[in-house]
Image 1 (cartoon, rainbow, N blue to C red):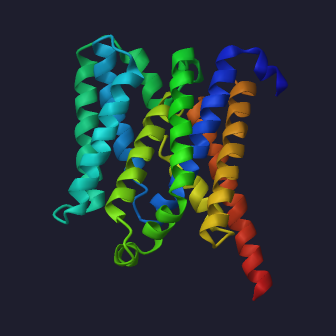
Image 2: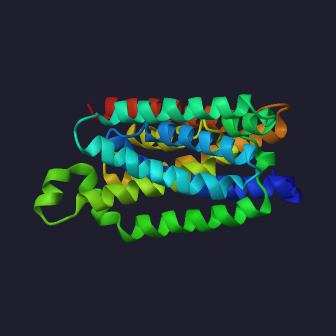
Length: 271
């Protein structure tokens, strides 16, 4: 495993992936508990459409997709909060529209190879510029989550009560959505638009098989996410033609099954 550090592209993929895994796990607990976990799929498809347009116009992919996905996250939050369109319906509406736009743009250009890596992920796609931008975005997400941890906790478990106590839940919901948007865009380079949402959903659900408190689930989720990513990268490195994104998802699935069995055994023991 140490020989990975001899290759620049693998080292970049490891650093970016671990940062994204950590950010996605932290945000994933709140998103899963708020039943808003599919926002990852919606925003990743918006990101795919933005990347398709950026590729067609020969523009920097991340510099185009980050503002577009952030705006989409804000729009999605506004649509679902006004009560006229439910959250899952709003995500489906935005997701399918963005995916269709991306497909149309790709069909009119010669960027099919690049788009394949955006859809399914590629550890070869991480450049030094992507690395720097990813580190900046990840630091922003982690710092914001730590600073607003108590408010995010309150909004996650009882939004009405948090409003009654003076917490501006709309502001903190917006912060969660925007931080999720940043994480999604950065992670798409490795995981792909079709698999990035797994980094949000799997670690949180895995941790909930064993732990019950918000803090314990959050910490365990972060550890599980990072360990699963390292295992996935190891699988990609040692196995021929194994895509990085799919390998990480399989590692997450394995962790979920292990924790599910462990949780079952612990419950049986306490009965």
